Length: 126
Image 1 (tube, rainbow, N blue to C red):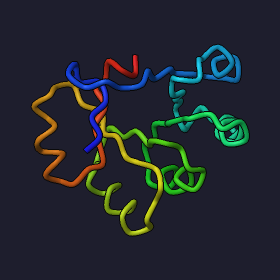
Image 2 (cartoon, rainbow, N blue to C red; image 1 turned 30 degrees about the horizontal axis):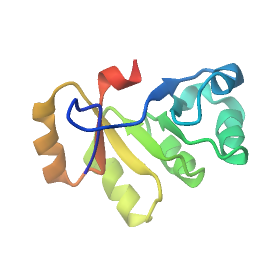
Image 3 (cartoon, one colour; image 1 turned 120 degrees about the horizontal axis):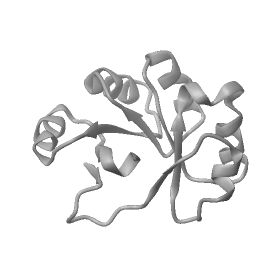
Image 4 (cartoon, rainbow, N blue to C red; image 1 turned 135 degrees about the vertical axis):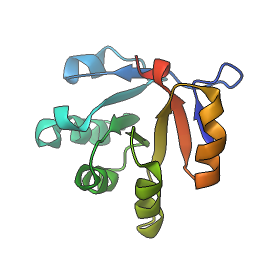
């Protein structure tokens, strides 16, 4: 299980962006992330793909999840129904890993039992 944001485990920095300027200001060791609904025409995703930039995005519906999985972000971030999305990811053998947003370490056990790829602490995304 991937655990991002736990004080005992090293993890890459995540940098929220809203446009190309944010990407340019982010160092190569960080992972840029953005909201799927802010990626109009998939321009941010395509820019990341074309320039080999590690990226993640947060989705809130299955249609965006399936479409963006085809654009191969490193991570797809979720805040609801992780088991539904994980089942879809396994059915279609998606390369992207699912990260479910958590507030507290105590949530990890339940998500591990569900077989969710990973978790990310909310403060990492702020």
